[in-house]
Image (tube, rainbow, N blue to C red):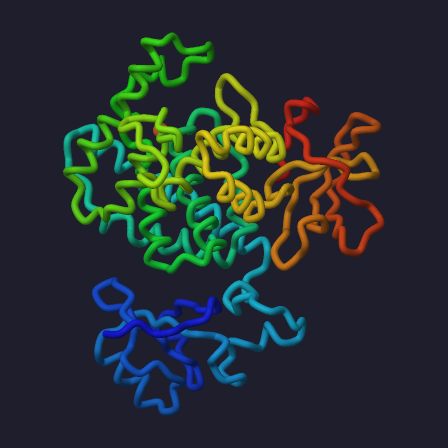
Length: 397
Ligand SMILES: [Fe+2]
């Protein structure tokens, strides 16, 4: 089968949603996306029947090249938006949040299972990741706001699970921003989910130690990458790219990282992306011993680590991708109300919808209000961390 040319506006549909006029570019065959030999619009019912007879469960449809009457574009046209997927438009924000919550819990269960299996000596099979990875990619492309919002609410006792999912999600988001293809996004997601798998053999007490680590303790923690290498060697179906994402996330461009001390060109794009994403997520997460850092403060640290440790232009690209006020982050508005950035897709970075719940002026919680900054005189003053305000934003996510 040959590769087909496709636009970014591609949607995966179950067979029962397939209709005349839809432009098919690929079908699933044994759970693999396979490009069709002659991509094109479906003109006859016979084609749909034929696909069903061949046991095809899903198809990939290019919305831009589908007919206006097939039902996919009806949500897009009235607003004149350039690239929102029709599938997204069919879900309300609340439904997207429910979906994102479900995915997050599925992903947590998967990583928990993977960790337990590995710890108990059972080999991993990459095939087990497929369903979650597909949903994660779909979510990162279509329902970014909802997933970011749900994922921003971290629980301090599930750090490793949530960090692994967030690194995978951020890698996919960053990869999509860099226009990497879907197969690459899959490999990035799997590498992200497995990137800290070696930590299952590290003593929890040292792993979660609040104080500064001694030299010996740091050397011991570095072993998680040696353990990871052994685990990954025994994992069925893992690609080199996924292995690299995992084994390179503590390497540094000047060669002072671990486990190999790789330098410069020895670190490919996906390896460099993993380093940036891992540090960013660690900084912006709250742990049992530290509060989350604001996005802007984390960006400042990432920049300070260039060019010695991190790729300078890639860090700036990452900042452009995430934005200074990403969904899920807390902001202080010019009316001294504090809120969670709730919706940002198809808006410029300074004008998201903000869910306000606290008045800094009066130092008390207020009735929850959604402020659309595109329709309001109020503007974002700055990003804030929950710790700096001594408030608990968790009920408002
Ligand atoms: Fe690590």
